Length: 363
Image (cartoon, rainbow, N blue to C red; front, side, top):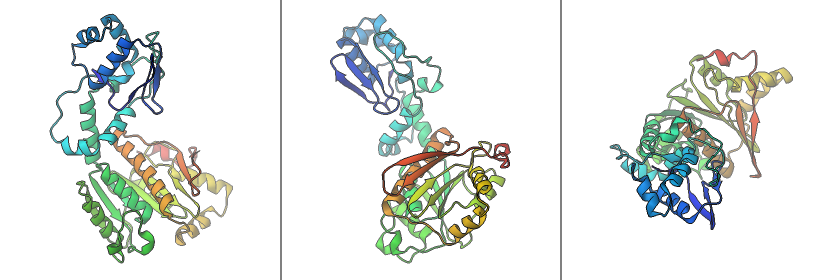
């Protein structure tokens, strides 16, 4: 067995160590030197059946080692089996991505080395999933996903580049416009000026040599729902007509809206989940009789900006949610990330299910 390879082991005092550096981190206090040495052995992995011998080599009583392992059940994985064929190069490129996927699998409570308990029951099945098997699963899920991106300015191009770098297998990209100087700075290069955005972006993703297949959609007419999900990037307001169309097809959508001085990511539409963009629109209409006309005007005028820093931030956050959706099959219900244009903060807004929407009955 071994400590979850997605988490870092740190010694922060003579008898205190910390596992992890993020929200899943936990501190172990009152640890003896042999216990700390045993934990360090667990970082590299102890072959199954050799735990007792390894404990003795560290000067730790095997019974104490078993108690320590029991308290760390949520942080342990079985020793890695031989890697499955095909993981090699991609696993090397995505080593940090795969480590994060493992670290996000569970979120146990704190652990104290002195009492042998951590407040969790260790029932989550991912605890016992071998690390390389999980890595292979993550790679397979990413490779098998096709994502459609509508809107390929600075923000959409960031989303495409990040998804390609993360190993997403296929991207269908659409935008009726040509590349202009205002699009440079995230993915497009000067030689792309005047080219169709989908064609130019496909070339830039291909240049990266990451193996993602890009399908440029060059029709002036917006495509319907396609692939496993669609990311709709717009300026001024969300395209609620497209989201309504996607709902009729039970097709997941993540809207990204770039406004004059901020950006909004979400909420997702996921069939049957509720708390969707149409719920948000209906609630706004209840309070604002001009909502529909206002939304149409914002979309018609493309009333938003794609500042390079805000576009990069919003695009990366949207891509991160899609990557997690690929890995775990879940999306944050009713959550809207509000990216402030001055870089001061990112807030999370919450959308409630609207009784007239009907999104919970889809799917």
